[in-house]
Length: 113
Image 1 (tube, rainbow, N blue to C red):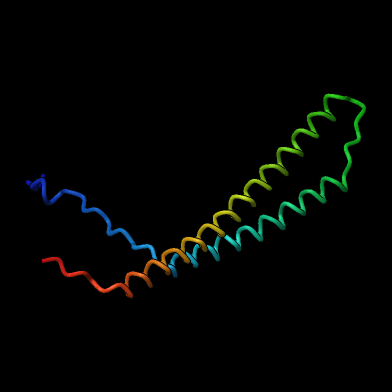
Image 2: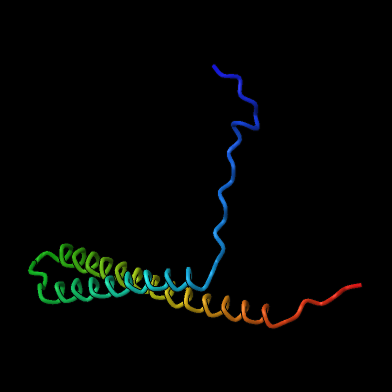
């Protein structure tokens, strides 16, 4: 085995990417695209369930089918809402960072003696 010092084998931390308005808006566009896709998926699932009623005389089967359909539509709707909120929050963050960058450039540095 090689004799390596501890500093040679130490894992260097990755550089942390700075948050910028462009990165936020890129993320917002991606989240918005996912929201649109999930919305279309949710609507097609709901329409499919509405077009195919449950045909059974067994009450347990009917109740389980209703519960599973509700669960599927609910999870899809929740994912749509989460991605929509993420898109809106990323746009708001981009605006906040842009305003902060403008105010930092406009204020002259104060000289402390």
